Amino acid sequence: MLAYRDGEAAAFEALYARHRARLYRYVLHQFRRREEADELFQEIWMSVIRAREHYEVTAKFATWLYRIAHNRLVDGFRARGRAAEFELDLTGDDGEAPDFPGPEALQPERHAERAELAGRLLAAIEALPAAQREAFLLAQEGELSVEEIAAATGVGFETAKSRLRYAHSRLRAGLEDLR
Image (cartoon, rainbow, N blue to C red; front, side, top):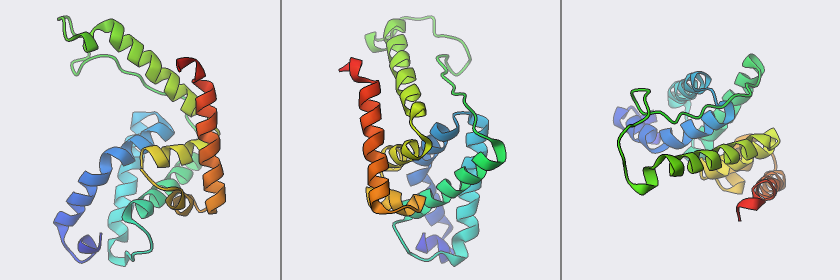
């Protein structure tokens, strides 16, 4: 980010390539509607671009980025209201289900099992209280430490640690039958 701040455009491309997938998944898991997630994702990166000239190192870049994401999410929730939908797309790129046999792992039964498991996991994550869900997603998708989660969400270390611990506990309890 320092190189980008100093005018090196390629540095932004490197930052974007390194963080885009995880950041997008984090945003998508918060909204679950692609249109809103796409819009918010772009707003976050535009915030990074606008902050370029005034960027100062106060934390790891990922912590700073997810702090921006957290703030934009809060703004988005206030402006749009919380959507309770999620998408699960089992079709191919052309919108049609494939009609040819594939490897065992890609057979419809296996695909359906994985889709059911993914749906249960998403539902368990959705059932978490918002603060716990955010802490869990920052840890999993953002790969942030407890200290970084605390900094990104503006809470104390112990609060972030508790939120993460309670999230893990609830997820384990909700998915216990899978053990």
